[in-house]
Length: 483
Image (cartoon, rainbow, N blue to C red; front, top):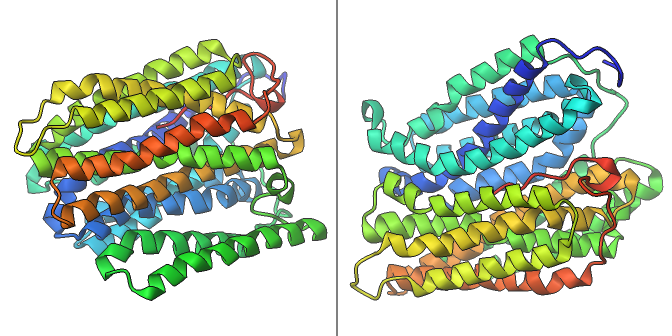
């Protein structure tokens, strides 16, 4: 279809298939958070093993997101989308049928790979489906589905676990993806047009290996160190992550000099504003997945709430994100640094207020007391995300906007995995040291509050972006906030 061609028949049905797949991927993250205590109890998993259920998915998603986007350019976006949804669906079945914690973590890695394969293709396929005048409405639907997923996930997870369908306990939270994935695949094959790929494009496999090695050298000790008693080799692994990261940067520069493929363009790594912005994205999202992991354990194992009650308790956060995202869309590109600072400050206030609402040792839990702190935190995240992406990408050359956006999303996921590792370490370390659940949650919350303070301060090191109102860099639609 050309820019001025006749609109494609069935394009909205095709869009529905893309949205269903994206919704399935997004809702899976929030469902798992609610199910963590049930998983740990049913599979007799250690603290570090249960952290890997969350971190393994985030890490594999982050590592494969950039190469999967390029691979879609090589083999065609529709083919890559279908492969990704198929892999995600099969992995969901393996998660639901997992006999033990090891097989569940392995299936979660595969699930992350499938999610990374399909996610970049959803936005890339929009120009093939819609004429320019309809693309704004199509992109808006992605933001709406992301907001709905963040709200529906905790509730659906609680309902499925509470219903104990056929005695399957937590397993339906994964098995429900099978029919959804099948519908998405059939809809894509029937209504999404084939987009030819470019077989001449290549992947930076060595860059992928270096990035993956560096992240594992950092995250494995943080998650497993306490369980292993902090042997010397654990600290050696963390130290080794530094030269490995330096080696990755050197390799990207070497590839750039040779005109060879790069996982992250060397021009981005040499852009101090982009690097600073990537650090900010990493810090901002380091405080979110880890929080929901420890908060679910606090509510369910610490105070006996059911998964559904736990999901309802966290609902104000999701509603806050959704409301702030709508408002952020209306503000467009106005006052980006001020909005990032305001969002980070709201997150600090929300997390601090949450600590103050925790019961004393032996005291009763008041779920209503968490409504305002969680709503403030959700408003903060929804306020900060969109202008953060705008500000960082506004300082990137047009030729690097696509790669910069993809890499920024990868840094977002890396931040999530790092936060799970650190907050899990603080939370479980306090519990094993004899502290109560309120003490453990307080210890974990100090980390994300500190991360949000750093975001509020460091954002002023970035220059003020100059963008066309209502657009992102290069005239592209603004990125949609995602929890």
